[in-house]
Length: 337
Image 1 (cartoon, rainbow, N blue to C red):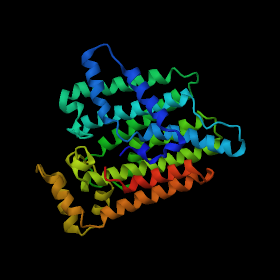
Image 2: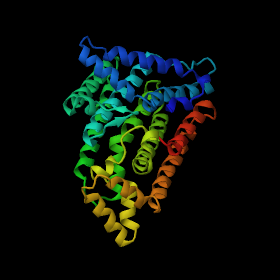
Image 3: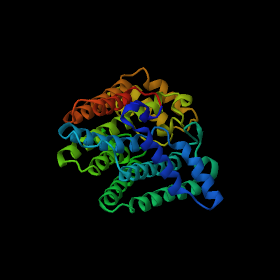
C-alpha cells in the first residue's frame, strides 16, 4: 500500500503526487529507446512514495501553522515542493537500484530487478543516471540550499552503505554501530525530505528541526521493520527478495540482539549458519530467530522510535495534517511489506 494512501483526500495531496509522477517521467525521458526502456522498468520500484509524500506533507504542516494564526494564508504549495518531492524520489530510486546490485536481489515490487534483467553494469549506470537527473532537476531552483542539502545527504547515504559493507560478516557488530548505519543509509534521506518540505515553506528553525526529527525517527523505525521483514516476511507479501541480509552477512537488529542474549549453543548455531554456504541458510536463521525474543525486541525498538517521531510533531496544531503524520508513523510498525 502506498504510504500516501494514509493521507485523507480532503487535504488535496493527490494532485501534487500526480504532478510528481509527471515531472519524474518528463525529467527522465530519453530519446534512446534502450535507456527509456530501463527507465520505464524502474518506475515499478516506486511503490510507497514515502519521501515525496513527506516533502509535501511537511510543507502543508508549516502552512497549517500559518493558517492557524492568519486566516488569509493559503494551504496550497508551489512548484518548488513538486520539484523537491521529485528529486528525493529520484535519489531514493537510485539507492534501490544500487542496493539490488549490492545484495544480488532478483525481485523488487514483485518484478525482476534491473540487475537481474540486464546485469550489474546496467543497474549501476542507471542508478548513476537517476542521481544525475536528480541534481540536474534540483539545480533548476533559484536557491542552492536544496542542492547543497541533497548533496550532503547523498554523501551520508553513501557513507552508510560503505560502513555496512565494511562490517559485513562481523559477528560482533554492536547496536550503536547498527543504528548509525541505518540512520545514514535510510533515515537521513527521510529526515532531509521533511526538512526540505518545511524549509521551502519558510518555516521557523524550531519547526524545521521538529519535522526533521520526526523524519529521522520515522526513517530509523522504517529500516528496522524492513530488517525484521527480511527475516520473517513472506516474499509474495513483501514483494522483494528476502533473506539477503543473511546471504550477504549483514547483521541486523534481531540478529545482534540474539547474539548478545541467546543461550551460547544457539548463538554458536546462528554464527555457523551465517558462515555456512547452505542455499537455505536464510530459512534456518528464520526458524531459529522466530521463537526467540529478538524479533519482538526489534519491533519494540521500532515502536519506541515511532513514539519519538509522534512526540516531535506535537508542536503542530491539532488537526488533519498532524493526524496524517501520526497515522503514517504508526503504519510504519504495522506494515507487512
